[in-house]
Amino acid sequence: MARIRLFAGAADILGASELTLDAATAGELRRLLVAGHGTSAEQVISRCSLMVDGVRAAEDGHPVQADSLVDVLPPFAGG
Image (cartoon, rainbow, N blue to C red; front, side, top):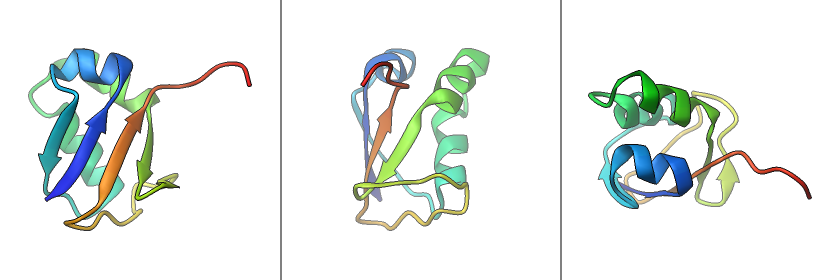
């Protein structure tokens, strides 16, 4: 199972800073994260970026391995 680290609003809405989930792709992982948490979770998670093993998962088909480390990051401003 992939290790998922949640930050800021994602951690707040899901009630955890870390989870383990079994997902084959970034899109499947997003669906699992919002399942059972309602519209608010979907709104928050849809705005977050997923970093899978240090690489931004820009597409739903981005692979997630059983031993992957996934960071769910909120949008950042500034720079």
